[in-house]
Length: 113
Image (cartoon, rainbow, N blue to C red; front, side, top):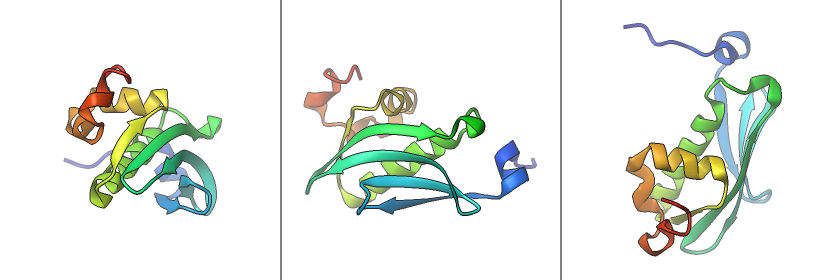
């Protein structure tokens, strides 16, 4: 089965996501252009995910989901607990139960998870 590619990937190229700790953001770039970001506040054992945003012209292409998935995978790899203050991050975790364990059990009710 052929993999479907989004309109963005076909027209502009593959997105890249990088952690930019000096900006406290995960940044999604497409062909060197910032297409979205997710701001955070990180401590030794936790990362608070504050706000995710994708450029309006690039919305509805699944880019925000890719950005959040990358961020959550990175948090897991670093052994960080996740505090999902961003509503879209909460929505993503609620619909992708494999990430629920990243949110501390005692905080899940506070975030509606």
